[in-house]
Length: 193
Image 1 (tube, rainbow, N blue to C red):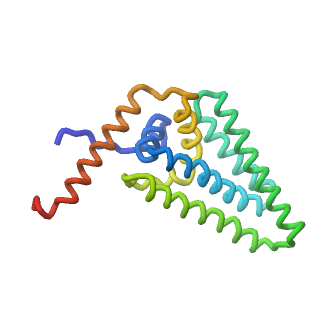
Image 2 (cartoon, one colour; image 1 turned 120 degrees about the vertical axis):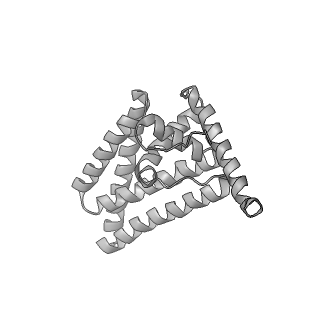
């Protein structure tokens, strides 16, 4: 009864990383998310690019500011900003190619952008189902905005580029162990009642 209940937030940075490391624990899910969270961002940038340069630049800048606050240290934040600018530029270039070479109309490009987003969501869900035994509590802001940035940060942790705070790995394992005990209890609830 005295066990702490963990409530995850997508801000401040420490809570966001703890949530992410707890429910994105396996290397397979990490690879899945590195690919498909950034595919999702490409789809979002593509939808923004359909409105012209101004919506694309406004969305890109606002996401860059958020990434700048979340990624530490600053050198790696700059690396991620360059990646985000590249994704934004790739989206605008892809849109230009669809307009000029294939004569796609706006509604067709919007469908393609939305399709890319939906495809990436399905692939991420498959990754969770296939690679993780824990179900994350719903965190819409985490999934829609913080996850691509945190996945990049996790990439730096996985490959030893950055060292995680000493208490995060231990706390992550304790939370996962508590969830395992709860899952076992729920499996046998009919016998207990």
